[in-house]
Amino acid sequence: MYVSQNSPIVRDANWDKLAQLSATETTILIKWAYQQQLEPEYFGDIPTKRLARWWGKGVNLLSYGKSWQTFNAPAISDEPILVDLCDRFYKGANSVLLYRYDQGVGISEHTDKPVFAPEVVIINLIDAQSNLFGDKPPIRFCYNKEKK
Image (cartoon, rainbow, N blue to C red; front, side, top):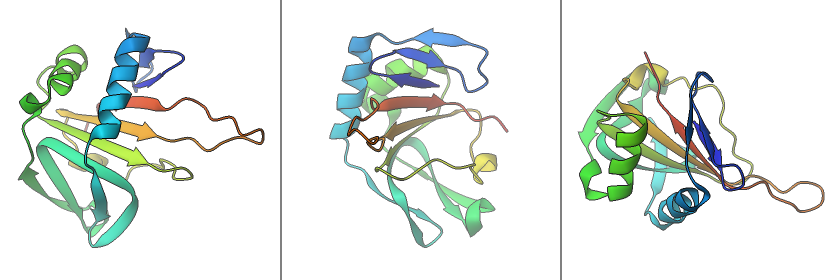
């Protein structure tokens, strides 16, 4: 699901359901996300161009997503904002992943989809590149539940 600061509509990845976040909620979420201590993500032993942080059940990808190791990350219940997101959008989620993409880093087709059980909530915080006139689209919050 995606939401921007200017248009706080959250849209399901399957494009068949809509939910609403207020502009205030969106601003709070984005501010909170930027305050998180993120670490470089590794795909096997190769660093990617994004930063990440897990809550609940975390996953280290190996062999280009063909295998993985799980680990226990800090509890989702430690972050009230995550508890609220999970309760509102995906009850029963046991994992939350916050990604930060820098300018110029895009999201391509994920090869790691088989890793993520339906209980995973993924938050993508994306800085968009400026256009020809120096204008930047608003930062977006992306909520996505991957299904096997």
